[in-house]
Image (cartoon, rainbow, N blue to C red; front, side, top):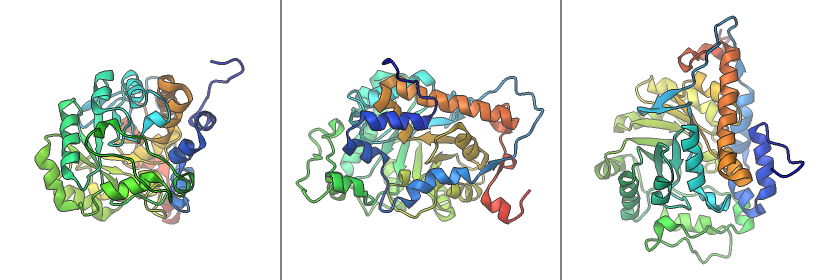
Length: 367
């Protein structure tokens, strides 16, 4: 560590380091949301409106944060969300992120738009890995990626369902954001797009993503893989019920880091509606706005089985490589452990809905 450089003590300080480390175009790409960025602000602000109802004088001399997700043991209910193009943050990219996941014993989600190949990530570490999927107009490309992921020991498919088209990310348009050539697709598809008007990412997505993909097509995905399928991007009761009807193995409550449709609710505000619809039949995983261990606890109290961390992982990677990612995960785990102790919850099963109070509770005089 350079002389005079202080070790970050929380995730927000890693964001500041990332801002200093990254070219503006890339920092803006990672941090930005769509249009007015209303949902982007809400994703973190909404956590601040949830307060705790801690229980005192509980034996919390031993805290156990370990859990199983889809049958896989993990050290904490914290997963690495699939985020695109880690080589924009660090030259070694997703390989380092995966190594950090393995070192921390948490599950790694690998993006379809990763800058390291499926095979490179698989051979780099022993982390349990899930593969995030976009469905392309050329279905055979998506099918090939799923088959490669399965052949390389990935354990589940995270089907992103909120992106028939790419959200309008104005910073990327202004910066004329350029996506690197993605090695996974070498010889299959080019990310090079002749478009001087704005983000070439937007043009690439418009050309590639299949906007016709719908519920009936989950059967196609089932036909090409034995892996469990989780649908990412569920925000409503109606879609939670649909997901269970088509028989997926899990739901990820997510608004794509507020990068798709602006003015959807913060994910923490949408979580309970989905949880109440699912009634425990399949796992519900939470994604969006986690910056503190207290945030993790709040999501668990509202019914999530685990949470995903997106941007902070990229910030850790940009600032300090594999060590930075490890520290981001470790800090969240340490903060969660402390929150559990101070709330009187020695294990995750002790965390209940009664441990938190939302604005709706205040309105309905709940508790």
